[in-house]
Length: 433
Image (cartoon, rainbow, N blue to C red; front, side, top):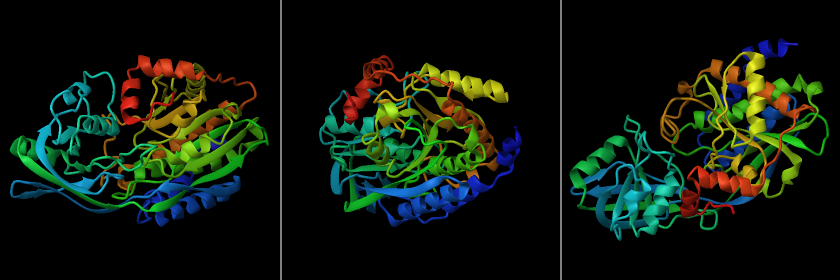
């Protein structure tokens, strides 16, 4: 009965696939590298025992990085363009908004170059996404946006701007390291600085990877991740490990397929990093009532302790608690909503969805979205232990006796308002109701 645990804890299937993904030159959405990663994932799922492994393509707005620069005084400061920044070369007075909290934008920013940090203070009640800070700058009339990392190590952060309706942002946007941000604020605040971005915006194609296990039921448990990564790093933690986890879960479930009462549908999405494009594409074409639950792996394996954020679905918390008790291993199951990963297009439709990640103890993304998101930051032990927990969780969700209630869209909207997320989503253009 427990042989599968030993097999999973000694398996190298997931880790080997992770190495395959990080060794590709790029997995940026819309590139040939992303497609090769998807093809490798399709083949890995088939080799793991899943059936009907295939790719589904869809069009996306492409974006290709060119040169970028910040010129301040007689200096040129290191920076990288944020994906989907428009090309442009603008000059304006530098305004350092510190954390860039909503109230910080309530000043004269017309024509200014606005800089905001990538974190929030400990006392603030919610995380502020990069795009919220960007679009608050846009609404205030800023000429350009500078996103300063809060993590030490000379690591400029990346991360997309743009919206679903307007995929290319409105003003040039760049990321700078914590050290460059501190230098800019100390030496040049109030002075004119220039921000330049060069980028191409071709039409492009991405793809989702699909495969299945279990009985041919109408309803399905979705086990998901995203294949793409930003072009500046290996994307090991974000999100090579998540896709490796999907492959490892498929391998483990193939040996337990007789225990599944409900079909398990594996989906490795494309183009997550540029607006959850792949998951939106899938969710819009899937009957919400046909989805029992979504187990979305985005940020797993980066530390030992597992978090299954339940998005306010009590039945998901109960299922995680049962698995944690059965295996005598902690699983944190907080109830908060998290609208920035591939579970979200389903949750907005009332579908129960976990966002599964590792508790690193860091504010924000840590090494994620920087050059330092590399394989050496991860440990095979963490991936294997979490694969055991998540395999058991999927079996629990797929059991005939497990009931997972959907919620109304009104209930989701009310929770967004209660958690003070609604205003920021409206600023970004992500409000779904």
